[in-house]
Length: 526
Image 1 (cartoon, rainbow, N blue to C red):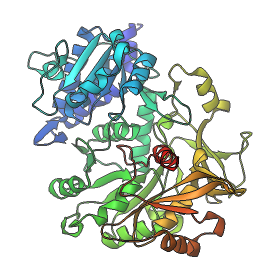
Image 2: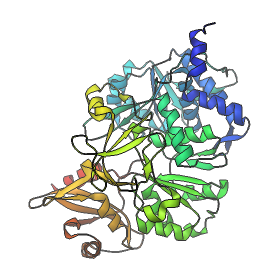
Image 3: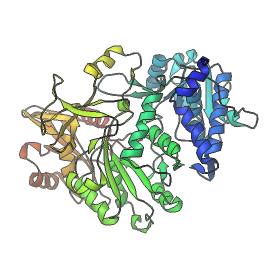
Image 4: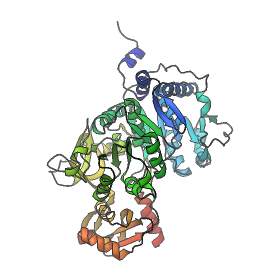
C-alpha cells in the first residue's frame, strides 16, 4: 500500500522543528531553558513552538515564506524560531545593530510576509521607510515590560495564551527546504543572505556531539546573539541533546561569571576576545568556576599567553579552538583537548562529516605547509546566497565552499588559520598576517586587546597599523609596544604605527569590526 504524500514526508524527513518535538518526547518535564526566573521544560517548549506555528499559519504564513526577526535573545523569539521550522517558513534573523537603510535593503531583498521586532527597536525598523509597505504583518516583543504595543501590530505574547493550539502542524516540509536566511556582510557593498537548509542544521549536530562533546548533563549560557549562526546552532544542538540552556539578553562578562557560579554552568562558547578580557574583570578571582569543564574559542585562535593564563587559573578545562563560517552552518575544523600541547595555535582537524582542504588560486590542493584558501565540502554547506546566483557560483565553484580564509595544513592533518584574504597586509612587497601581529601584541603584559589593520602609506603602500586597548590602570606608548614587537616578530611585520583607544568596535558576538575601525581611522586622518 502506497503512503499519502504527508505520511511519506513525515516518515523520512529531517527538519529542525521535529528535533524539538522529539526532545519533548524524550526529556518531557526536564528543564530545557532558563531565562531570568522562568524555567521552561522540553514539553512546554514544544507546546509553545506549536502554538507559534499554528498562529503563523492563521496569519497566512506557510512553507517558503520569509519572516524577519530583529530582537535580542528572548524566549518568545525561540518559540517563534522553532514554530516557523515546523511549517517550513523561513526564519530571517537580522542584526539588532542595523539601521534604517540596512534594514530596508534586507526587506527589499527577501520580501518578508511579516516582521517581528523588540520593543526598543520599533523606531529603528520604522526608519526603513516605504519598503515596509510591502510587509503584511508586524509583530512585537515586549522585552522591557513597560512599552505599549504599536497600533496595528500584534503583541507576540498573544500567540502563547491558553487558547492557542498546541497540536503539531500537519505540513509537508522537506529536508532540503531553506530553514534560515542569515545576512552576512563580506567584501561586497551589500550583505548576502546565506540559505541554510534543514539538512544543514541536522548535519551540524554531528559536529557538536562528536567534535565539541555536547552532553546531556551540560549547562550552557546562550548569550551570543541568536541572529548569528553560532548562537542558532548551539541552542539547537543543546535542545536536541537534552542539555540545559541559559538564555540571556546579550553577552555581559560580569553576568557570565555570576550565572556560571549560580547555575553551575559546564560549558562556555565565546570569541577569543572575551576569554582575553574575562580574567581582567575586577573581582574575577572571587567567582566559583568549579563547575566549568569545557570551553570553545572562535573568531580567532587563542593566543598562547592567554591559554597559558587560563590553564593556570583552571588546569582541568578542556580547550577547543574552532573555525567555521555561516556558509558552513558553521562547521569546519576543531582542535582536540587531548592534543592541545602539540597543536597550540592551530584550528585543529576537519570536523565530523566534512572535508577541508587548502587550495591555490586555480583550485589545486597545495602541499602540506603551504598557505592557500581553506575550502569545505559536505552536507553542512549552504544551499547558496538568496537572490545572488553569480556570487553563489563563485563561492561554490568546482563543488567546494570557498571560505575566503587563508590557512595551511601540516603533515599530521592539522589546520592552521593564517588570515582572512582581505586582512592580509601587503607591506613593502611582503605579506603580513594581521593575526600573527595581534598574537604578539596581546602577549605584552599591559595589552588587553589589539587589532591590526592596513593603512595607506606613501612608501610601504600599506602600513602595518596596531590599534591597542590597554588593561585597566596601565600606561604605555608607541615606542614601548614597537620595541616589544621587535623582540617577537620579523622587522617587516612590526607595526609602523600604534594607536591607543579605550575600546574596539565589535559585533554583538564579540568579533572586532576591522572595517569600521579602518574607516574611522581614515576619516580621522583626513
